[in-house]
Amino acid sequence: MTARERVIAAINFRKPDRVPHSIGFTWQLNDKMIAYTGDPDYKKKLGNAIAYTSLLKPQIEVRPGYFMDEFGVIWNKSGLDRDTGVPDNRLLEETEDLATYAFPPVDEAYIRARMERLCSRTDDRFRVAAIEFALFERAWSLRGMEDLLCDMIVEPDFVDELLDKITDKILRTLDIALTYDVDAIYFTDDWGQQKGLIMGPKLWRQFIKPRMAKIYQKVHDAGKYVAHHSCGDLREIMDEFHEIGADVYQTFQPEIYGLDYAKKLYGKIAVWGGISTQRDLPLKTPEEIKVITRRLLDAFPNGGLIASPTHTLPPDVPPENVLAMLDVLLDQ
Image (tube, rainbow, N blue to C red; front, side, top):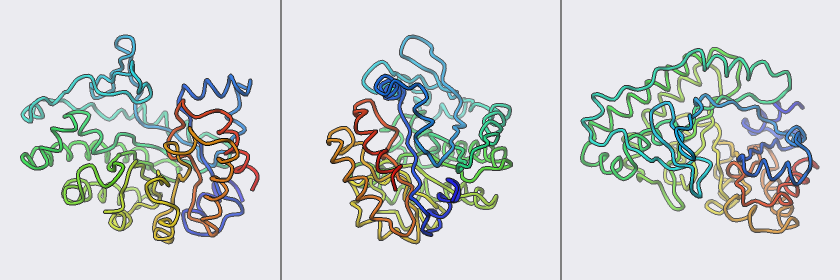
């Protein structure tokens, strides 16, 4: 089987000849891996089954350690969180500010350039285009997390208008991206925390569910799969997550769910993840990582799994543990 065929088999709960895997690196760990292996091209040997492109426009450094995204949010990456960063400004200080805030236009030339680059690959990997910081995350980055959650209770009309504007931009982006020969659209939008949903199931159903259902439907109408990344615990809405069209759930955190929970998802939502970047990869020995990785593969004997760390690998993961994980993934 090709890498693409393995992923499609896994998503459709058919047993592939080997479990497909995908591994991503923060720039900090990437530098550590190059130094440790002495190989600047080590990524070419990972065997990743997924070819990935982000449709998020690159941020611009406005001063050392501070980067502005296309929406005008400035992200402080000078502290511990140097990968994503934290917002340093708030564009919607008051709900009334939405009336004068100008959303960035959909940059068709940029999207087409990214899609053409992805589709020009000649390898056999499963092609994924990503819309990152999709809906809830985009809203709180503009308004602030605490205020947005309060707005859901006291200013629901404002939240509806804000989310509708964000949804419209996503749909117009999809109008372009879905004309290309890709396999899936991947959304990143964190809804979970260590236990339960950030906004709770009632508010998720009111504000997030109907809009994501509309977005997912557009992807399915084009004959593509839907993959969605959310950190945290989605058990309260997992059945509805499947019902509105999620084909693949990333990231499946074993420290939250446990591998037994995967049996409840079998035949509904395929799992992408399973190797903990919170509990295991930074802290265990290489031999322990091998056991953990084998245990994950054994828990999915008939498809349903794209094996992966539960997040882009952070800099606190020892290179030895990365290689131990790879030893198992590549030797099936």
